[in-house]
Picture 1: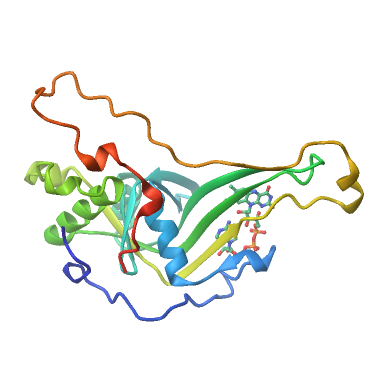
Picture 2: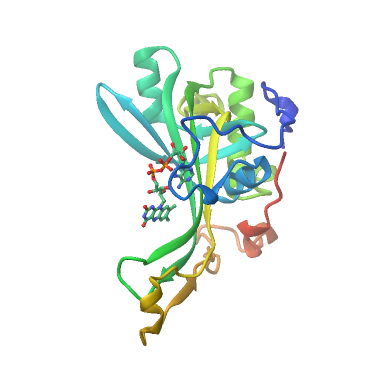
Length: 236
Ligand SMILES: Cc1cc2nc3c(=O)[nH]c(=O)nc-3n(C[C@H](O)[C@H](O)[C@H](O)COP(=O)(O)OP(=O)(O)OC[C@H]3O[C@@H](n4cnc5c(N)ncnc54)[C@H](O)[C@@H]3O)c2cc1C
């Protein structure tokens, strides 16, 4: 596994991302969080992100896979890369990540909500051209999806590397927003005989389904048997 020092860029030492005029949460500002550890934990727990950008006056929002190393977010991004190649320079983008923690059922239709942890990142997308950085990023992305996997899976060969596009974005303009509370109803509605509360939701893997072509000698690895994203440790 590559370490943070295998990647360019400063992992930084600040404990908070600065709230800029663009990232300051205005609607329900008490839910805004800029604490680095919290932001990083959300990015590390989430399996996927969405990259938003404008190309030829058309906004696109593309779901893809990401992994964070220090204050760099790596993403698999062939769609974004097509656009980057066309413009041959960094492109403004917005990346979002969302973890859904619960359905919030209020007494009125209006106040229904969800409990969530989300992150919005504003910045510039760049393609990763350096072969070593690209290889390291692919390893980190695989480890992000299934920690422990990169020590067993065959690494990419030259053709596979060429066929893969990795983009990166530095984390500097970043905000998180977190909702954790029970429903917030109008005072008069608390008397209604309607069930209200939170239905917690969590990410639960099912039972592993072994590939029918796998040799029966190969056991299910413990990182598959005990897959649990909520126990991921923040990497830095
Ligand atoms: C699962 C889910 C359900 C939601 N349901 C609702 C809903 O029903 N109604 C509703 O109004 N909102 C809902 N939100 C919140 C929504 O994402 C926005 O925060 C909200 O709509 C305010 O948008 P705005 O552009 O006015 O925010 P502003 O406060 O004006 O945004 C200013 C800046 O704050 C930051 N920011 C805003 N929202 C987020 C966010 N979610 N995460 C991280 N940074 C953020 C961004 O940097 C943004 O540029 C939900 C969010 C999630 C993840």
